[in-house]
Length: 408
Image (cartoon, rainbow, N blue to C red; front, side, top):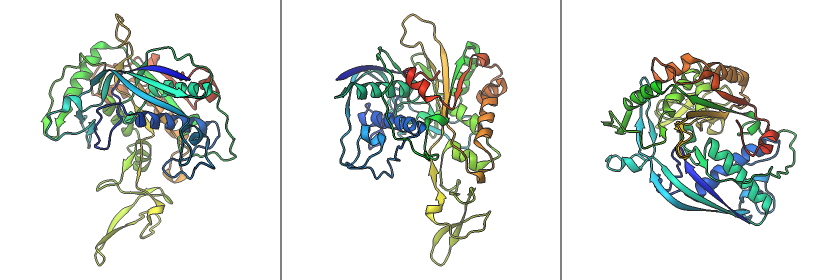
């Protein structure tokens, strides 16, 4: 059994190699993304999906996800090959919105700045060939491709990458997913029944021009080389995700731990690890005699907090697409500009001081408010059709499976 999927990126796809560059769509990057979505789906249905970074699955005992995607001693039950039909590259940008403390690197950073026009991920057209022995497995992989291409495939989906068009009829049927229900499904890993999705239409073309002007004021090709202007006419997207992420981060400015937990962080010189017992950022101390650093908790006063009781990094739980033209591959059709915001809000530890419901209400209130979008891009005209915003919270997975992966 096999199927061909015609994939056309609407925002750049990133599947990096060992050198952190992206010169081709790597099958491993696509498969890893499909696995992530399948894990969330299985957990949302109440089944077991291991954390692959800590998995003990093997050829004798394996979770439902490893059954399909493979693990030590058990082969993956499908094959995926990529063929380049028309390869194109997206430009690399360093993006620094006004008032942002840190810049976002959209692609591979070449300090010389000589190859920036090809270092921002992949555009173009591609064919994915899926081969499986079983029609049910083939249908499940097609379903996962549909879901991931609609919302984010590959890496960097929190920074605008990975929205793609599937340009052929997949002839999807409802996936046949059989799981063993757990009494206590995992709550600290992504699960689809806790996901939210927003589709946000951009209808004010004059405001879109103002956004382009604002973007150009925050673009660099090296840390010391600003790019004061850029012709976006040949591209189907605008690199706006860092502006939207900054605006969302600002919603949680009064709670550093919650903000870092939702938007992702890596402990470094500025941001310290989080104490998992108290949910407070730790304070770094210096042991002068041993010439080593250690951490203390400012809340419980515990000294020398051990690694196993601290959170040193976490990925973003909120993802933002760039603004893109959804009609880019539809021939002589007027552009239709949209963006997407989506993510997973888990049940929050009581020590954080806010609940999952608090986060949901804050996002619902602000993402549908004109003032949020004016502040987001620093412009005086609202680009968003507020009444046209579509949203769904706490996904009905049975409906998702029946509708062929259509969330909105």
